[in-house]
Amino acid sequence: MPQPVDPRAPNRRWAPVRALLAFLALPGCVAFLIPLAVVGGKPPAAAHSPIALALWGAGVAALLRCCWEFYTVGRGTLAPWDPPTQLVVTGPYRYSRNPMYLSVVVILIGWAVGYRSESLLAYAGIVGALFQWRVVCAEEPWAARLYGDAWRAYRTRTPRWLRQPRPSIDR
Image (tube, rainbow, N blue to C red; front, side):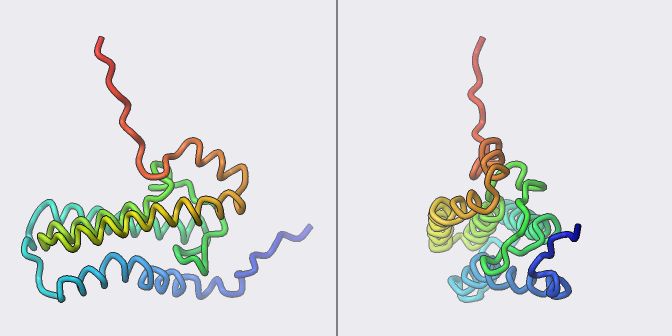
């Protein structure tokens, strides 16, 4: 019996280009272009702040890993016009259903710390609130329809954002 054909299979050779364009168009704008526009492109006030560098570096590393998982495991990109065809539950997605969004917010907080900017911190808060709205109103219902039982099982075992620490019990 012949295997089902991915409707995007003829375009697989363009997959790396699509993945790069999606990265540049979405987190590239939200996490890099807009923050730099907010500060007018000037150098950060605290350019060598270990906290800013750690936040920014951790966010970028996690974001790149998430994009890699979408591309290799999910066989798609982070773009809504080219989403993964497989449910991604590996890498950072083992710990959070939305590590890509968390990564962007961490990057934005890194920018805010590095620039000592209340405007960038407010922007990070607004972006985080918009991510929450998008996840709850659009992405989770879409994933439930597309992936069915696999999504429900994943949703049950993996938190939307971060696992809550368990309270300690004094004995």
